[in-house]
Length: 302
Image 1 (spheres, one colour):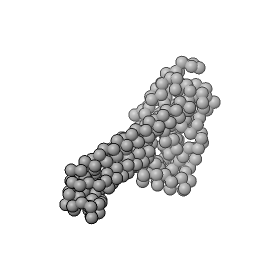
Image 2 (image 1 turned 135 degrees about the vertical axis):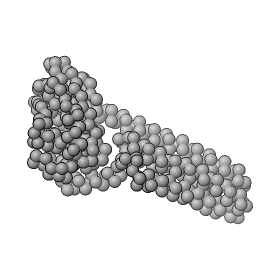
Image 3 (image 1 turned 60 degrees about the vertical axis):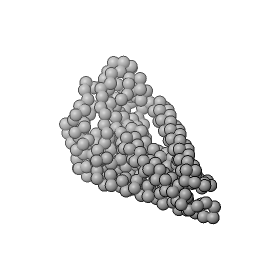
Image 4 (image 1 turned 180 degrees about the vertical axis):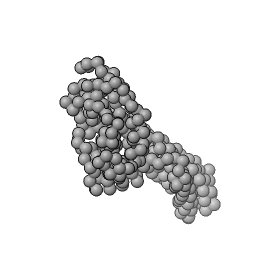
């Protein structure tokens, strides 16, 4: 949540893609509740790093202040009228400049777009979608909704306890394991022809395939775990994907080395797997570091 200095900076910068001012909240009427829901939906659909609804601030940046922020009521309204569920954090933040006052801060964080009205309220109808362009809230165009739906199929973060997701990840892990075993067996047989005994090659390939398959299956499970727990899902997905590619390439390159015994083949395979895993880990770390820096710099600039 924002501290006093960060809040003052946001107020001084004015309304934007991720900041909106409200003199007060009217939660006693359908019109007031519907306007709040519309603003939250627009933030969730348009501000990937999060948005802030500042209550107690006029459109001209003048501080009015509020006495309280009804978090429980706000959470209840959002849960009733917004689909899918959106992450909200409410706080009453004191400031001393330009005058002493309390500002109500509603932080909006999104995971699965598009967000829409779950039911009709006020002048808004069920399933209506809104987006934010700068400081203006508009009804989403059909192409915007299609784009958000396509995005969700890539970076969606469903509940880990849903059976279809567990089945999908288990199937992907098992298929990757079997594919790697078959790949290593085929490669070792081809490399053994005319140069080495077939049996040592098959044994070495089988062991490398099992080890490589286990690592690849573990990488897929790790990818799933990362996506569930990180908001930067798309980047995390790409990072782990390329890490897995590097790992598999390491296994294949190691398997292509000449070997005269199962021990030599196994050793080269393990070396390749280790190098691939290290390279992948470095790659993921660098990507996440860059992502963190960009996000922090962006928040400071805003």
